[in-house]
Image (cartoon, rainbow, N blue to C red; front, side, top):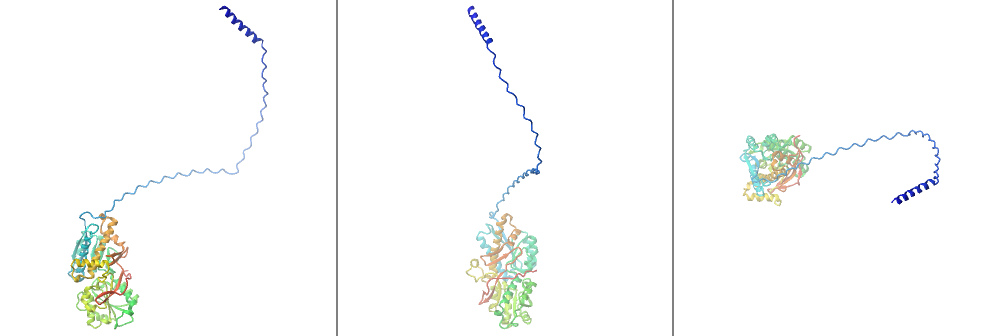
Length: 464
């Protein structure tokens, strides 16, 4: 053990001697440091030649579009009647007074028209009923009837006379009740309001007759009339609102413009059994044309008395649309031959027309008397169909629940042409138009009303 320790000590001693005797290492030479490069003077700053571009302002952020509120859902319009719902059509007129001869067939035609309409389903499923009153030709009765009817808020009323139409015109507008009227004086129909004439107003009819007369005078002038080169007219007519409806300031001025002289207006009472005085006065005034705004016995009396005086061939005799009726033919008999008139509708003789055929069938089905086979029955039946059309158009626009007289009036005032019963009569209303304008001139030939012209347009002679 001691030997091992001694050996280790000797080894360490020898190593130490050897390390002391070894040569010292050569030091690594230090490289010389280069002198630093002199710092260059800074270049002068060059002034800019252009002004710097201005900094653009940022585009403003657009406000977001407001979100549109959704359209409210409109409730669907009710265009079909509820069970048991009814629509009433109102009319009143004279069946016991001086106009009974023409009004009685009108009432019959209206009644049968409503019956026919109900047989076809009524008005959009609503049963159609009628309210009617006889006024006996008295204006005070017409006004009291209206006062009673208006409380029931009619959608529409049918009138037949000029006097009641004129008297009620302003009231109808105030109460917002539209009226279709067969009493078509200019005063009752204008200014435009709630009154709608079912034929051209009487002054327009006279103007249309003047147009035809002036254009055809050389062919139609009477064989023995005085002043043969110039049509010279006397109005021989009833002293009523209806009778005086043809000659107005506007129609008289129009006649003069057309080279037609109006030399007299001779009046007589309704039902007068003799008008020879008026005819002789017309002759004395130089007239060779007599025009009458009367119906039934009115034109018949003029024609018969012209024959009895021996002056029938000295006058061309003519009248308005209501004169062109079977009642006039029956009362005047052969004296009616050659009588001229203004006719704005088809007639019973148009037997191939669908509307005439339907009305004829209903006339027979309801066992009407031959005396009712008149222009009144024909047109009143058509009036019902017109009312149906205007009410249905209103229902389509506003619905059953908003159906009022005012709404029906809005429809009528914007309706334009309406061919009633396939064109038995054509109505034509507009914003400021309250009467149709189309008619033909017809002549009595062998007991029939024969058209001698195509459809003509009457001049507009409404009051200024």
